[in-house]
Length: 274
Image (tube, rainbow, N blue to C red; front, side, top):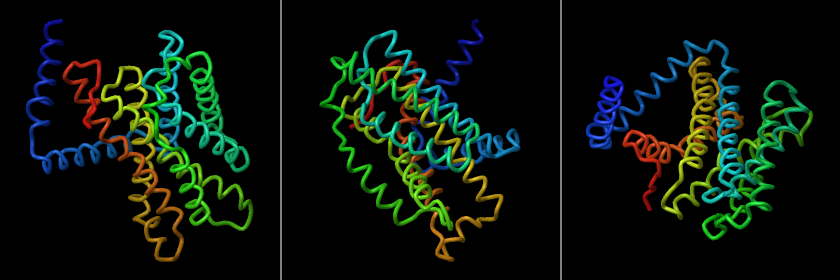
């Protein structure tokens, strides 16, 4: 028992008194090195890149289960953004429809399950737990997310000679997914403090985004940057899809930083900076 506590205390000391106090340039370098090592390890462990997407979808579903636990046991949705859940349900619904039309595989089933869970959360927030929903803090306008994503989908989407609507919808859900967590992050910044279950959920989203982004980066590496070179031929979809993955990963980086920092310091409540 003593050795476990000593080990945890030593890790805490390393993170709290060394890493966090280093110059920003060194911290960025350490973060990049950690990402490179993570990508390398995942590539060695997972031979099939498809497993990255499956792991990402399962992680997202795990975060939703954490929210279901909160709503059913604590009977409160305090700190949870209804608008983020509505955006999530929107892009999942579109992706499930497109997936049924284009693929119809395990990703379809995972997305369908996550959509059902998300729809249930929305129903609970709007009905049984409406009195605990803090609407004033959830003030990010949805149209500022949906409209630009729709316009971008019309301008840049996968090429093909058939199923034009499906390709537009697929691009729309990719772009919308990239920004769907923004209302939740805005709400947490407005509240200044984040209770544990909501924090676990958002951190799970960060891990899911990291896994999905890792898949794209590894594919770019394995193809010698072919996806990026397609821009020179006027084909912007693959670079834009990669950019969307990177954007949604970096949107959550700041929160994940404070989540890990609070965890290493033994704090249950995360305090976000203004």
